[in-house]
Length: 393
Image (cartoon, rainbow, N blue to C red):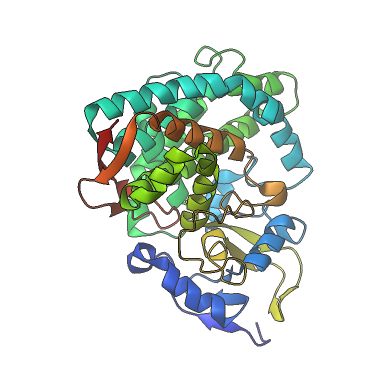
């Protein structure tokens, strides 16, 4: 690294930064388009256009050589849809492409809406509940588990295990050490689900095993991809739902606007996803020497594509730290972009829309009954508590 570049010794994964990352990210973003983060030896991209372009360019920014910071975790992820590039990535992703297509989502919409209606009615009747613990950490887990065809038993392990797994994408931190056993238990449990006797016929898990039987993929690849779909299918939705509950309780005029015009709900959800960006970003490896706005990154350099920072870039979004009801940022990067864009984006939006549509005829107002507690996961932006009281209609 003899050529000039901008460095920072900030630890983006430290508890202080995780608690309030955006002022720090804003300072780094203004220093340079690409900043060398000396603490953990990687390059940070935090400007919207650069992150979007890099996310869409799998040939220059490969996922196949690692989407996590540490090599041991990258070795663990090998074989799955998340840590592959075309053509292998496309082959793995094609296994469930029919299940995630818009037409297929129409087939499951009624079931999801029915479950959302039950959840909304139950918690409105209670009058007091925690938006995170009682709803956000339960509802999407049951939805995605039903779609995969997993048994009801042991679902309480899903979110703690998935949350700890996401922490594994970063460095060894105190948070990861404290939740290491949850991650291990979860990762040991997932391969046991590659068993037709435990999976509902015709669901996603059974379809993956069909592909194994047909010789289209190996069993290890199926397990790794199932892990990726299950883990990613929970955390983004869990944390976006939590943040939306907090928004509606803290800004009652937004909930009133949604109740008056249901058409606003989708853009509210997209703006929450932009503002909160539940998964902050993943890593890539440069396959060749790269120039980012004049800053050289050598071949083999590890690069973090920071979606949360990009989604608050004032070059792309005016007044980016403010929730704007009418912004409707459909181009946000909370689900990634391009070849590696999250295939579950449609199902996540469907889940969130169904839930809050179910609350509309039941709840006049959400109120906070205690402090909102921010989560400490260094890779996932989350909430650990959203205590609510509802004013029923």
